[in-house]
Image (cartoon, rainbow, N blue to C red; front, side, top):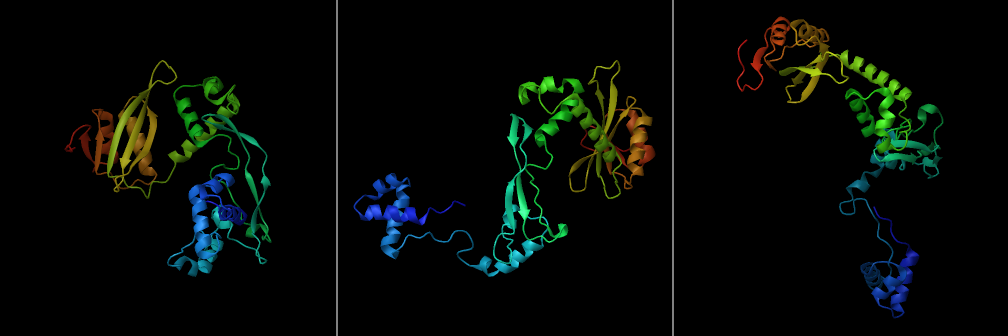
Length: 313
């Protein structure tokens, strides 16, 4: 919402017009729009003043104003509130409870256009009597310990999977992030790969007892990202929920597309709670998957990839 222009400025424009200048000349003299000057003069001549009218709120039905106390009460009871909502919290003497309290130390944030110097705004709760009562604010745009933007964080694992080694990230990204790509040293990348491995392990152990998949797509993807002598096969399963949403069910490195490798993946999903068999499985001509499917989920029907009608098992 735009801020109202000062009362002093309004009076100066009106005085200039009443002294003989045109509205356009007065507007140009004081740096306001001609339409604004005309509106102020018109209000002065019809109402005797040019004070700004109230802004915001429900100026027509006044239903919001009637519920003001109830709404503010709900805001104060909500632990996760926005900065604007914090502004509504007042002390007993009417002062703002949450106020700005300077800035944190400046730091460099890596972005897609290079490093950007930023500092977080600090807030102080003047009404808290203990740590439990203190209102805390955490920026969603600039998290407390962020050193890179989310888009850059998503780019790093993609580059790693493409075969960029830990020691080459700085050289590869120097053109994008500046000289030597600060914050992406081999030690940092090694720490990030350890974090990615931990996230992957937690994802691989997640509980599936509440999940149900109606359709399952299976495929084996052969990767040779790091130029090994023999390419490994990544077994991938994608499922569709009854609501029509596709999800990655699981994947693991297998020995070609053997029955044993597919069986291990399917048995692991079932052991983690996937009790209801999918209605239909779609795959290519690899016989290993179909044999494993018959052993683990015998009631699931088969369909070759590209077929519009499911084939019987």
